[in-house]
Length: 464
Ligand code: F0G
Image (cartoon, rainbow, N blue to C red; front, side, top):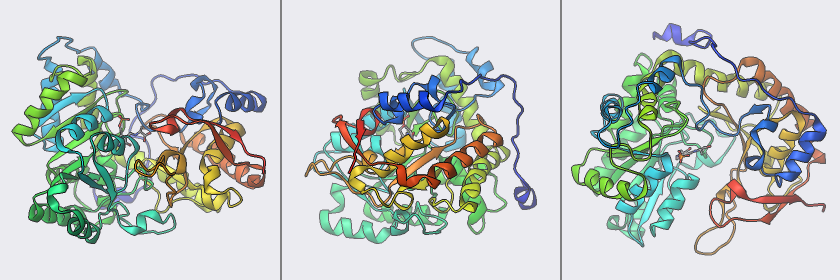
């Protein structure tokens, strides 16, 4: 794609062949549904949702080619031809030599953490992700946030809020020693920061730093193609480079990766752990047979590995990614134009509402983002997700609630699923809810699960 074409208006590089009919509900029905769900949008039945912006995970629309790929499934227990296709595809597009399939991203995180993290270790990362941090902790490690400060400020318009702060890494090494740091977990397009990218320059600087300290870089590459798009749009020297080449370059600066292929790669289930080191691969093969399945399927059906290989190739096409991020920007700009407080710049997979700014009357320990998510569902049946204090959980040492600076509601766009008209409905609904923000009440837990409490926690409204 030339720079000139990149500036043209975006449109979907596909047409719709099949549709899924949606149920429309009344406000009364939705009020009852959210009460029954304990004010947690994860506990709603999908049948009661009109526009589902809960997540972009496993909910994309597969292409006709991916569906055709399902028919090519080689469901042999061992040595499926779809595995070899996947392995070759990962090496071709992502540079990693060895691939260990897993049932989804957290399966790869579990194996990675068990291999590399020892009790007492520290694992720095450019902001935490819920499942990633938990696996580090379960292996005895402590997560350390080394993202730049701008990432914690929703109003900062820094173009690469996913960047790593090398000074924070220097401080950590001084404090604990580099032998206590097995690897640095670097996410491309940082989810919890609002879908914010890391720059190529920062990744290169980090590579140099890690080489000096003999520390590995493990890449959470869940949304690497979206990160590559921002590099193409914003970073000097990359304007004419195809997305596929930027993705390859990013990956080749790292030593290994965990992948949830339910996002970028547009399959409903699947993931992998990938690396270049033979011994690391051997260790991963030893564990994958315990937790996931044989090393040539790791919890995936042959047909799913085939759809994944095809999805990877589609995910790095310039026209695809331009329309994908274009739709997110359409929604974000429409909200911004109406004065809604959102995380800036607009992210790659989602628009994040700043719940602290929208509901200043609700204290953070009464979970404003959770309350806003519930109110949005009641208004028009749009389902979104809390990404604030509930998601952040409790400090494993002190047991105290984390108080993250970012108290956000995530409007996440599934890939290739909704139209621009759906986005307009969402904008209208968000504005209506904000106009009546005073009537939204805070929440308290009635049930708090031990791990990843945001998934299954239940709440009630607080009256004071
Ligand atoms: N890393 C990142 C950055 C993620 O966003 C996710 C999942 C994972 C790892 C774990 O992958 O779900 O396949 O086990 N994110 C989903 C979301 C759940 O909605 O953001 P998984």
